[in-house]
Image 1 (tube, rainbow over the protein chains, first blue to last red):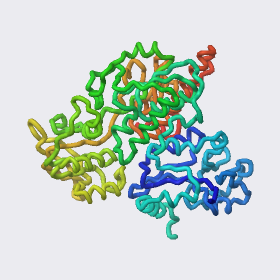
Image 2: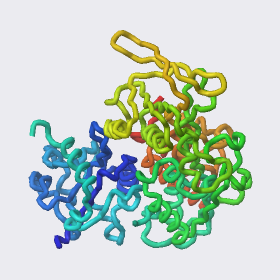
Image 3: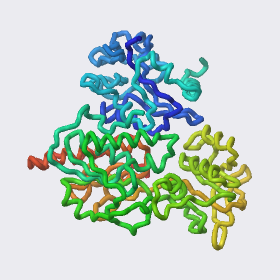
Image 4: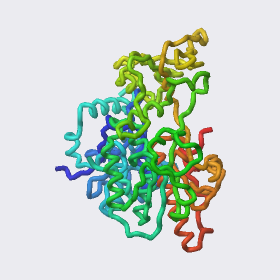
Length: 165
Length: 360
């Protein structure tokens, strides 16, 4: 067991209804998950994987991105504040770091850190009408995958990939 | 399967706070508001014309997109854990004549709005957008012309044994579906399943611009649906019923008209909001963003949220609007109880937020 929690979204189940995005916005003021879609119509909620080897944290020169006790990669505003490089945003392969235009200027998913402290799970997971978002141990993800989810994932990664790479 | 957790803001049931709120409409915005307010200890009663809470999440969007069980378990959890009372088959009367919209067939009870205002400390209207947009072309009132909801709703509702609900009879017929949103895709799917001889799928732009994406259209084509793009319906032909449709095609040489041989037409081109008592409540003004109150109407303890306020949108926006209106309602009641309504934030308009500005 890795003991690292993360979100897993089955893109083949997502209908693009934006519930995750708006529930996140209500819970956190600025949403940390954003709906997008590929040209052929696969709905793509952009979200943080809390990677085992997080490129955002490697790119951050201030050590503002740190893993918490449940495995979530947390942005520490006190260290992030004032940085103008946006290295983390550029480094994320999943486009899951967001420029906010206010305050600390960067927002990212913290797996609803404040909710976890009082025994609740991430809000988007609770409210997704399709049950497409799961809050899981990283090790559990392969068990959740299906042929359809893998196909949708391939289409999504084709879409997110930096052009020419 | 886990339930959708409308009570996502609290980890355990709240102590009753002695206030009662009536919520009209059990769709995404109504249920989100129900979840928020029941987490604060409000006694919530939800009124809905349909046989089950869930709104278009159950009766509009097909089960392979939204699992019905997840919604059913979620509303059952509201009943059992949060003590919410659902009054189904119930319509709150009524700006238009009954049987004006899809789903009215289910009503067994009609309650007056005046009594509601007296019964509850506050009311929230979350009735959504049920009236279908019309093509506005000659012949569209002929038998055989359906809106997206008129066509799809009975297919979902027929399981619930409502009187006067029957499946559209299209076996062996030639069907034209107009529009390229998900409703149009669902209509084309269902037309095939109900045994249509031929299904034409018309869209005024090209496949690249489809709101549903190219993938859905390709899947329909694989099922035998004929895709017809850059096509604008001009008029529907026929005396007693649909006998054909005159369509204008945009071509490199300018527009060309053609007559399509069809006997059923499904115009899945969207819905408009159907707020009850729009005039009395001043909703026309709310929707233009001219009224200062967030989600609040001309009657002081009546709030409005979701698609009834902003017009057709996605589930996410409806949920957010329901949550915001519920928060505003709770603030209003708290301040009113302390005789401090001057502190109520009348400028806290959801219409001012990014993504909620009115399009037109």
